[in-house]
Amino acid sequence: AEITCVGVSPSGRLVSSGQMPYALGDGFGSIYVWDYAQQTVLYVLKGHKGSILSCKFSEDDRWLISTGSDGKVCVWDMEVGQMSGGCKEGPTSDGRVMAKWATWCPMESQGRRPKYTLCVGYEKEIRVCVWEFSIKTM
Image 1 (cartoon, rainbow, N blue to C red):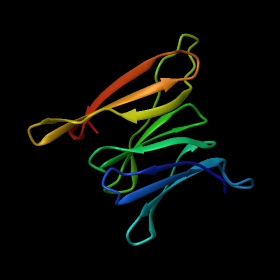
Image 2 (image 1 turned 30 degrees about the vertical axis):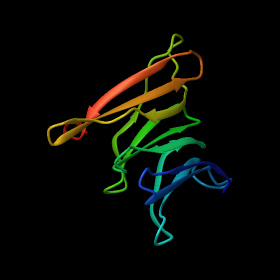
Image 3 (image 1 turned 90 degrees about the vertical axis):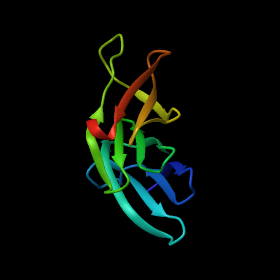
């Protein structure tokens, strides 16, 4: 399958590659998460119908955020290799959701629980949505 995007974790420990779906497959794009030092695949993540547009790790390597051609944003837990809380959607003026990119804002510590903030850019509007969550709410 064709690679559509690549992400490297801030520590350099993890590498992700987003891919287009296989021609005869289920229609879902895959994200491969690699252990860079061991050169092995840790996880194969599927949650986007269609191609993966972007994938980016959080500052602490705990989370991976991805956007897909389905317009959704997914948050993945890198401790277990699973989607955390499902894919998220945000409003656009015409009621459709077409996220094109997503990135992490700087982390904030709140005692033992860090606060994570996501910034998402949409196709039909020049708009950035900020979603805040903590491990407690995931």
